[in-house]
Structures are given as structure tokens and as C-alpha cells.
Length: 312
Image (cartoon, rainbow, N blue to C red; front, top):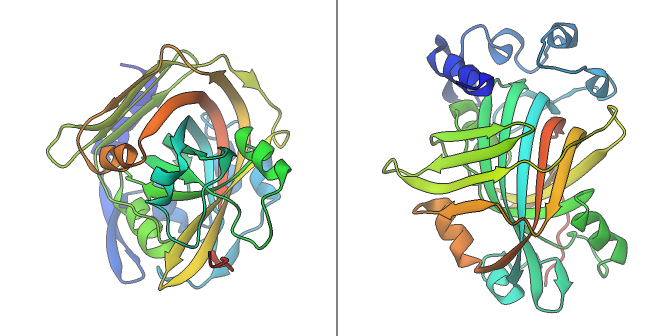
């Protein structure tokens, strides 16, 4: 069994305790980072974890205590070792607009063509402990006044900065679901979700309510390039509505090892039956144009803040 799968099994059988999140009770690993530190994690201890390359990226991001729908919490949420993959596809703007709120507009690469994506995430070391996640998302124009700048499009295509609206965001743990849904306004639910990413192969499977396949991915991992910590930091701004008010959530990824393939030939994406599959089909993707994999990275996820979204 690969080491990453062994780690998943270890997390699954670990003894658990209960924690309160804004009046919601969630199950967490006993003795895990959240159980011991409640988001105020000891960076020196994390630095001793052999899975973590270093913590300098986080020492430059002081945490702030804020009130939120899940109670008082510290922000950002730190992810000390992650791996991720993104499948970027073309879709017709008409189909995309049918799934977007009226205040948001698709980011178009050409008239009538926008970008959508399927993403999978594995968070090995995190303030809220190990979990996995998947997403179907839409690239949108920045929700600010004025026309889209050419450099916004270039940055989005290079994954340096992307603005998005998420349709589906299943996760594998209760704490991730409650924090993501109640605290951030994301469409999250809990399901069995396996993600395994290494330098040779990338696989993922999201299970539906009947135990079958919702979405599944299998592909050779693109050749990886290593980056010094802080050299390549990408940002993602996600828009959600909380209590009928628009908010933006900023995430910053410290990329440590990554690679990409244009028009991948050996990528197999199985679209089965389930919420993610339905969302992806509703966007009627035309073709896959890029496959990105980060085999090692770090992430700072900030709490959402109110934002002005232009009426359209």
C-alpha cells in the first residue's frame, strides 16, 4: 500500500473526540492539531513533522482572531503540506451563465467561451487535521467595477490569480464541512473521497450517496519543477453569499513542486452519478485544455470578508 494511503487509513481509525463550532458539534481526531491547538498551532512542532518542508511561509502570516458564523476563530487557516490537481476545460458561456448568480459573469478566453475546472485536494498536515476535498468551479471575472483587464486573463490562465464561483465542494471530514459551509458559505457536504497524488500518478475518486462513483480521475502526473518557498505564490478569490450578502475568500498557495500539461492525452475523467457529476454535465464542457498538478505545496485560507459585487 502506498504511504499516502497508509496515512489515510491511520487517520480513519484514529480515536476521536467532540468539538464545538458555533453551536455545531463535530468529530475530530484525538490528539490532532485542532484538538491540541484550536487553530493556534505551534509552528515549531509542525516544523518537526517529516512531511513538512518548512514553516517560513507561515511565520510571515500572523493570525488574527475574528468573530464568524462558527464562533470566534483564528484566520488564516494554515495547511502545511498539501497536494492538488486541476483539470481546466472550455465550456460555452451560455451554459456557464445558466449556473452563475446574476451578479457574476464568466471569464471568457474568446467570445462565447469560458473556463471551468474540476479540482481535487489532499491536505496531509493542516490546522484542522487531514482531509480531502474536490470541486467543480467556474472561472469568473473579478467582482469589481470596470472592464476586465487583459492581465487578469493572462494571470488566470497561468493559475497565478483566479477568481471563481464553486458549484460543488465535497469534503471527507465533519469539521471541514461545517467550517466550509457555515463559516465560508461554500456548498460542502461529507462523503468518501480518496485523493492520491505523487510524482508518478494522480488519482482521485468521489463517492456518491449510493456508494458508487460521482467523479473519478486517473492520469500520469506531469513532470514536476521544484520552487523555493515563497518564489511562486498563487492566489484564488472565491465568491460566496452569506446571509444574502456577498463575500470573498482569499487563499494563497505556496507552490513547492508543480507541473502542467497542455491538452493532456492520457487523462481519464470518469463522470458518474452524483452532485458533482450533475454540476459538471450542466456546464457541458467542450474539451480539456490543461492539467495542473502540485505534488507539494502549502496554503493559507483566509476567512471571508464582505465585498462589493456589481449588479449586471
